[in-house]
Length: 170
Image (tube, rainbow, N blue to C red):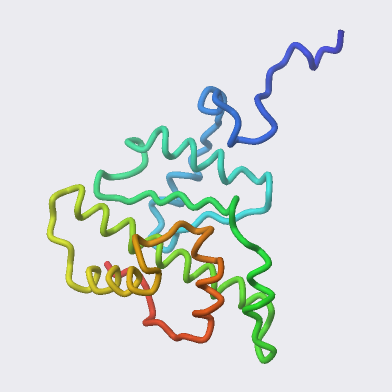
């Protein structure tokens, strides 16, 4: 019997590991990143631990976030990566196709999350948010779709449209 058979280090991926919170080590970096006014997105290579960090943050939300803070999970499992080839502008770097479609997806997910937050807390939804949501419902003909539908045929048909800039304000 191999000594490694005695040690349980969990599943290969955080997505499938029910015991992740039992052995996740928080070295304080997560709190530092959250407290930074310029941090709002976690990026990393496959296997870097993004899902583990998000799962830990979700399970211990009260240790890191205020009640008013939004935590928006984005899963690119159903993401159509081939869409970027169709969005490439010959006059710009290929990486900009990723940037533009990700910005679009993130903006839409933020609009959905903020609207849901206002409604779930029985607060009046600001007019600008109502208008943005109404525009998206008009474009997508129904409730605002999931990421997989966003980057499907509809995004291709919208690739030439310039939408208003989105950004967070304090």
